[in-house]
Amino acid sequence: MEIKKISEGEYSTLLGMNGGMVESPDAKRIVYARKYDLEKSETEIWVCDRNLENHRKVFDVSCGNHNGPSATFITDSLIVFRDSEDNLPVFRIMDIDTGDIKYKIRAKESHCAENGKYPFSVSKEFIDKNPDYPEIDKCGIYILDVTSGKIESAVSEKDILDMVRGHGLTPNEYTASVAHVQLNPSAKAVMMRLGVEDCPVFGALGCVDLDTGKTHVIPDKPVHQLWFDDDTYMATRQFNQGKHIEMETSYIARFSKDGRELEVLGGISNHMDGSADRKWFAGDRCYPGFSPNVYLYRRGDKNGAAVFEIPHDEYITWNLQVHPNPSFSRDGKRLYFNKLCPGGGRYKTEAVFADISDIVGN
Image (tube, rainbow, N blue to C red; front, side):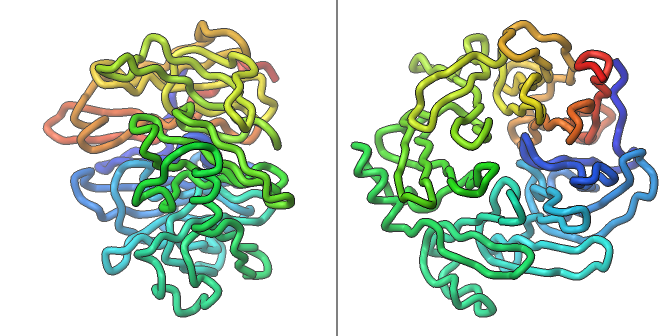
């Protein structure tokens, strides 16, 4: 099965987080990053047509390789990506047709937008760093309406700490500095990764129903979680027998908000995603000591329907933090991921996609 490079040249290309919105909602454009040296922070945001024509740079940022600049589409013309300014993370929402920066907020970016609403998290280092947005005045999770510009506090630091304690867990100094914030499809619930004393390996997964305030927590959570639907998650279940996290026993599953496993979705995985119709799932074998191959699974089958081989290079994968991060296209007929290209005296990675339409059907 042919793997196509999004762009080819004397540079590396990168896609963002697993399950990221690589394509615009109208499926006409792709957003990706270029980097001329993976060991430096200078990074460029690029867009092109879905047929890989009309490539153009839209912005310069400073970021590491882990998830790149986390560039993702919000609308057909709006993208969001992370940057660093004065040694502090910042995310920007940009109109790629006009070049206007619609919002620049010093905070931790989230996974993606839902229904035009973009969540983000604020920890203590960001307090008083957003003078243009006086409503960002305390730690916690906020939601930006990208059309109106209205920013609302969704979950406060106190809410987060009360949730953790209320579910029998012990907060630490980083608990309120949540990560992987994601709204469910209706934007009526928000989930987040929590650092707690009781779960030093996998952490905990918290969720707040925004209408009712009801909370849910999964201790020792499954990893690289995404919303499956409005009420359940899809994620990789991993096991640690005291020495290392096991590759061979990992698998993709569906979970309730409180951690009950509902069904097996696929086999070996770390970073994962599901097609929009939830009939197909993908995961990468991103574990130390293994080539980080990407696997395509039919729902409920742990045996891969296709395997996309990726060269094994521990330095690129773990020191430079380039992970495959599979993501489906909007129509489910493409699988996007990062492919390592070791050798040649330099470190390189390529943003690619595989046309899987013959497997998943038309």
